Each structure stands twice: as C-alpha cells, then as structure tokens.
Length: 174
Image (cartoon, rainbow, N blue to C red; front, side, top):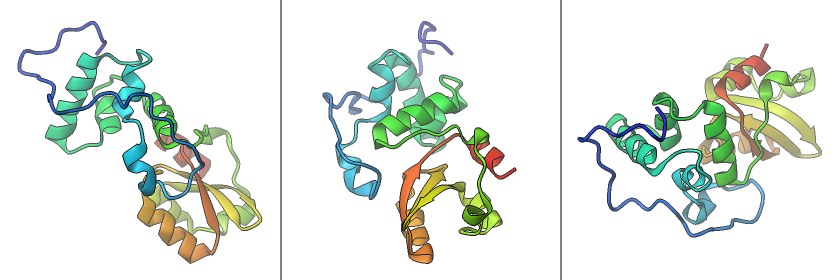
C-alpha cells in the first residue's frame, strides 16, 4: 500500500481518534513506561507528521487494528504500510528509548547466565550490557511493564530498556 492509493469506500476513519498531540515533548530516560503513557505522542502522529505514512493509511490501519485486535504498529506492519524496523524506530521515538540492530551483537556468557535461554526467547528479551547494578535489556515489547518489574525482582538489577526487531532479537541468540 502507498499513501497515494485510494481507500476502499467502506473504510472510514474513526472521527473521535486524535492524530496529533501538539508537539508533546517527553523528557527522561527509560524506566516506568506506563507512568508516562498518557503524555506520549501517539504512534500514528509520529508516522504521519514527517510524512512516513498518510492520514488515509493511518485510518486504514486504525480500522484494521480495531477489527483484528492488534496494536497500531502491528496493524501497519501486517498491512505492509511500513516495515517492522520503521515501526520499531517510531516506537522508540514515542517511548524515548534507543533502537538497537540486535542481529549484529554478541551476547557474552556472563550476560547469557542472567536469563534462561528458553525464557528469554519466549519473552523476546536479550541482555545487551551490564554496568554495575544496571542491565541494558533488548525487549521485543518495551511497553511490557509487568515483565520489566518481574525481571528486576528476579535479578535484583535495574533494567534499562531498548528495543529491536523480532528477527534481530532471535538472531542475537545464535
């Protein structure tokens, strides 16, 4: 799909949907992402504003999201409007966290011991670095605050969250 293609006539955009958050700026670093969720710019706005996608494609994706029970980013990728990497980079702007190309990293044995490999793969996490009592963790879903809290409780480390594509995370295990 591209921004110039007309939408099917039966696809409408929800009128109550807000597309732009008037240049909301969020300061700070990763941590409790849920506490800042109401102050975050919307993912759609981050993609429409610079022209990455059109408002028509956003409307199409919002309808697809609603009908399929997906997150907006998943809907955009499923519809081939954007790649997963573009979606993840926009998510990073929204959450104010870094994007890492995880397929080019090597996870050392000391970091591998922090999490059981099966558990890590099941939850889409890869330890990236350890500095003192802080572990930088690549997460497929960096908004999963319950998982972040669980991992901090299990390990005793403070977690700094970054994200990558699913393929990059899987490649980091090999």
